Image 1 (cartoon, rainbow, N blue to C red):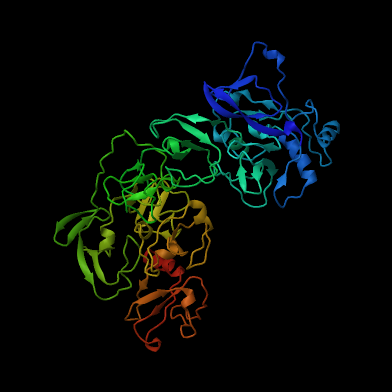
Image 2 (image 1 turned 90 degrees about the horizontal axis):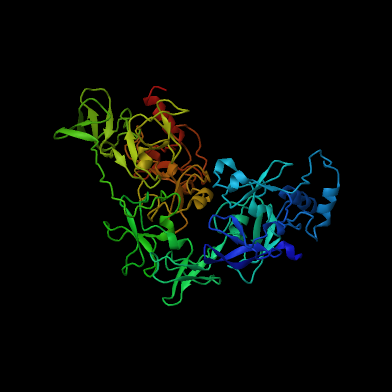
Length: 594
């Protein structure tokens, strides 16, 4: 391979501090980067230095596409350099010497790319830029534009050599590939890699060019995290981080030999006080935990974690607490905690009589002993079965379950990072009027709604908290899946892999259930049955349970949807009831005049 196509890292200084700085092997050590990312020329005769010219990545891709299919990882085989550098690929030279248009009439990019100075002088916004090579809007250091195809590129994507010797993997080579056949994410920034990437097939290492060429500090002085100087240590594959408790070979690792302290570069700068959507108090970072203190899954007592100072035995893994869907990104250290104002949902007038914020009349507490299909809670849109409920004393058919009447006016929920406000009618919507679509289960509802901006969940989904005791499973359920795992998970009940449905999972087994199925009543009442009907999964069906008394059709048993059946008496004297999901829509429509 031509030496001009191999990128290496050399020890250089940025603002007087030692770094591993990426450079092409053909470049000399006459330039020094500054903290702003700009290149400073060392020496007085700047004009004597010839700056290299680079091909448009579209031209490299054209040669690449002519030589390969599009079914797997495909290695690039052309240098990024313009023909002014010796040893340029012959196919590139042939394209440059050919007509200005190819056989399809598309113009061939024959000119070298040029820097975009308006981009390089400031931090670019995401909506201003999309790289024509890697197809990402990721922030880089500098940018180029091709005057022929009018595409913009990261500096790193333009100058990307065919191979990189990275300091984090001193005994490996990362080679330049294009169009991976399967979904691949950058091991550093976790962004999906659509096109150009550096990859090592042997160890399945993949990096975005911007991440692969990022300067790496050799020494880090951060007394807030550790009192001694931390040194870059490249062989990190077997080192457990003392802050997050994980071995992450994708992150540069630093050590303090005096203290036998190991830390990833991003863990050094983790915040100390944060607020997460999974807990109603602030949590603080601690370097170690008392023996036996754990939550959900065991937290290593010798490694860092986030704990609540107000709730004993509440601890969270460091990286779990800092997930994008859990933490709002704000460091709260040094900021006073605002007192939480509690607004009661109703005012007590007398014993058993209240005025609820959602209704202008007095409501009286009553006990339901006989099922009345016409009594439906206005908050959760479920029937009133047995138990306590509030009804309007002015006979206007307004009814609330006692639990729904006690629903808090403000709520912190694990599904959303901001407080939710309980409302009778949702705020302004683009698609619906007088009803809304729940963001967790995607059911349509005209009941009460918990709302924050455009985020809305119904009362049933809002009642789900961790740990969630689902009657159809022997273990407690949690929101423990990260967003990628949740997108790929399949619900055990409806067998849907719907990416828009939120899902709960069991951390002791592989059980997963979506919010739509988890919030179905486990027991239901039917007007022609004296007993409650119990929900059963489709796999529990048998030849004896083969007829639905509502739709008067055979129940098709599969692992999908499930059904309701009576467990309290023989089948011959008790109706069988398959309560499909459309029944809820029909019930809601009937009671609301639709």
